[in-house]
Amino acid sequence: MTDAASAERRVRIPAAHDRADLATFLGRALRLDESTVVRLHRRRDGLIAAWVRTGFDALAVRVLSGAVTPADTCVAADGLRAALTAPGAGESIDPGWAVDSAWRGSLPPEEGYVHVDDVPARVLVDLAQRGVAVTREQGAQGPPVSLLAQEVLEVSGGGTTVGVPMRLVFALNGMGFVPTGSTAGATAEIDLARIDPAEVVRVRATATWLRLDARYGSVYLRRGGGIGLNVL
Image (cartoon, rainbow, N blue to C red):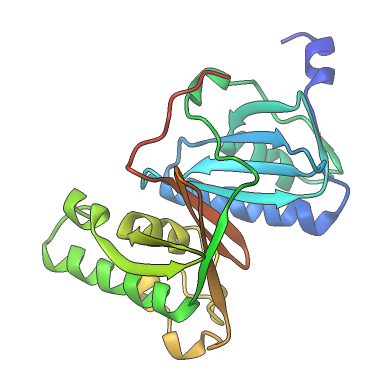
């Protein structure tokens, strides 16, 4: 990469807390997949959306204030996290080499979602803990495909009814998007009693996407399974 090309590829995040939040977000994504990439996308409202795949066929996103050049690019998550946490790192960051060919899935739309209902966060963490217990009972190295595909919650409202599959519940919890009132690193170790009863996760949907919005981020799943192909 030439110096000129490097200068054209920048991420500018003015607020230190946003840089810390993005580093945390990337750290959680790397725990799920150490080779994951992050797609940085400038939204129509001017904010940056940082997208990652979670390993459960679901996407996760964190939205923050800043700017990215070019407006839609994909880089290695570990490299960007290292740049964010490097000593003396400031608001202007070199995101690293482009790996746009590593992301062949279309992004969900920014608008057009129906608010189906709000679900107590405790319910979703409890479901994730039960899923972990089932996986351990079966002695599996990871959640079986049948468990991931199982719809463990039905939500109705806004003139629609959606089933929430376990893969989306695992993705939400794996990314640590629900405030749990503790520093427990593993889902099974979370004390449900410490989760604020008033804390909710919002369920939204379009005809093709299902979305869970929690306090610290959102996860998305294409309805009907799979992530649609779209070359950047």
